[in-house]
Image 1 (cartoon, rainbow, N blue to C red):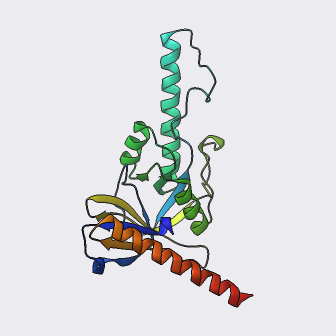
Image 2: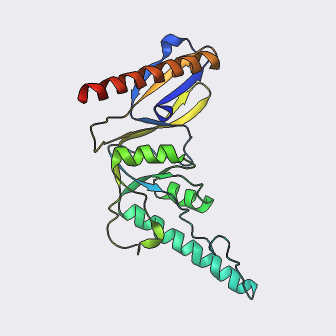
Length: 213
């Protein structure tokens, strides 16, 4: 339920509404408007390769060697972004923060980026779309990227003073995601309404389970 509702204070309760798709509680790190359906990928790794693995010491013999390593990382990042572009990927949904060079390439190639998504948000998107996270470093930067989802729309949504990402997905299951916008004069009212609704949905879920049995 936490990933399927957003609370906005300073508005009357009557302004509450239901919207199709998912509202991700993050603004776009990069936003490039696009018409029609978009191909999207999930990311759990930075697209800019690290010079060393976590916990492993990186030793260079000279400044020249260090600069060469940086150039390699930059070329690899550019190749990955071009590969995504060639597969018509227009939306990157990442659980980790991406390097500024990735954001720059995304803007250059017309891709939108949402980063720092929670594990719960990533799991929900994966369940709705049926895709697994894209593994950039197991990929040869050639061929088709198969783990892509179809986003029916992708746009910023201004709720009060916050701008969030509002994305619709083509669902591969019976569940068609919608989000509840809860409005209230103060946060406490929204919390009470959210708790009451969650309790009601839990009760209905248990009731349907009993009927199915």
